[in-house]
Length: 92
Image (cartoon, rainbow, N blue to C red):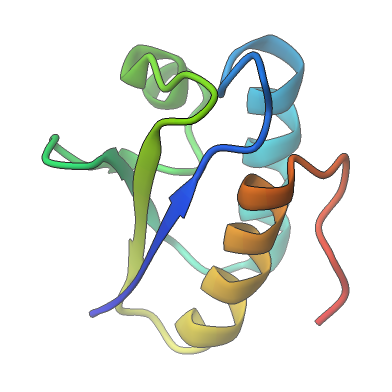
């Protein structure tokens, strides 16, 4: 299982607009992955409802994980998006 631990770069955390950007980015990778607050239970990273239920705030550390083909590259891209608080998924 590939994992990335990242600190959320969006000041408002994974709520409203950043959550929408995140879910869209995860879905666009085509790689199923989970997200969890450090020490918490993982949720489907492509689910807006699951993501909002995390209650992840800016500065919190989250763990992205996947065991699918292409996980390493997809996790790197999504981790960069989260850490830098970007508005779109960085190029591969």
